[in-house]
Length: 386
Image (cartoon, rainbow, N blue to C red; front, side):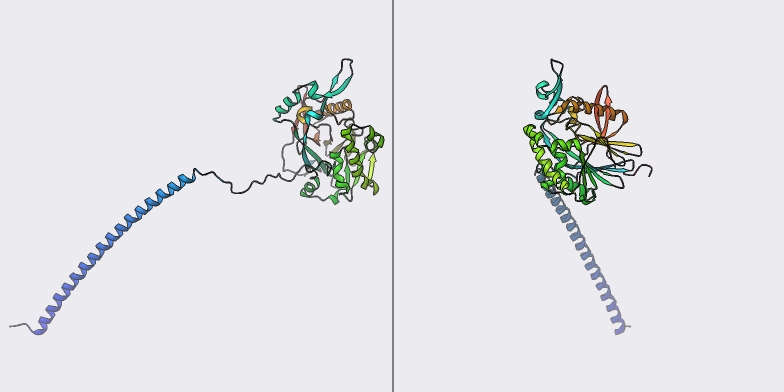
């Protein structure tokens, strides 16, 4: 019996469907193989490109390593503002830098020597002891001319603001005259200064009160030893002074005049207490009325000693070394030696005008020789017992 047309049609459909499925499978397999092949080729190309890039990068690094290095910014070449402070009991002491200048060691340093007749007088250090100054400087890794600091000191007692010395102002040229800027940088203004105590009337101590003859401390009274005032304002002394000292007389007149005209120049007698806790100590020799100032608080003492020392590496090991600027070299040596010994014995703080800024430290005696001990840097600025 023959199959019906419907049966034949169903069988043919099944066969066609089967052939279609087989064809699709073959297509899928072929596509998968082609994709796999393409991926493999892509990975090979990626690997090849990575190798090329790596080689190029290494070549670039090698090339650059032979080129000179360049700084990322220009050098600044300036120092921080010139102020530094410590607490002395309940009193704040601020060192202020007016500037630095080359100190001509070989030209101005002398030494008190005993002559054949038994007298003592100052002779040039370089002549009496050739090479001594250079050897002492070399021990501190220094050489002539030494860059010398010009320091002043601000004393804040809590009730009064007192400046001790004022720097050179305009009398030493562009090296100096920076005290006002450093005063402001330290947090104070010239208008706040109540009094200015001068250790003596040399240009690098008095010039800052009136640069170019114009007063810059409008509310301050100037205090100075009467003996120094009498000497430096005397026309006869000026006429008889060595040539290198004559400009000092002119600078003193120009600096002091505006304060004298306004009634704010008040000399004092030796040994006087000028303010509670601050006493004037006569230390003559460098000038006739040279004065140091003793500041005391809570059992602590600091001596602002002016020009007892000009070149620390030379005058600490040998206090007999003086300078041509000393009005009485023998007296200057005697005062220096006595203060060295007293300060070493009592652990008195020293604030020095011409020891490397900030010029604050102590003195010790070792085997009969004096040494300078600079203050340890501190950020602890609390009054005693606080």
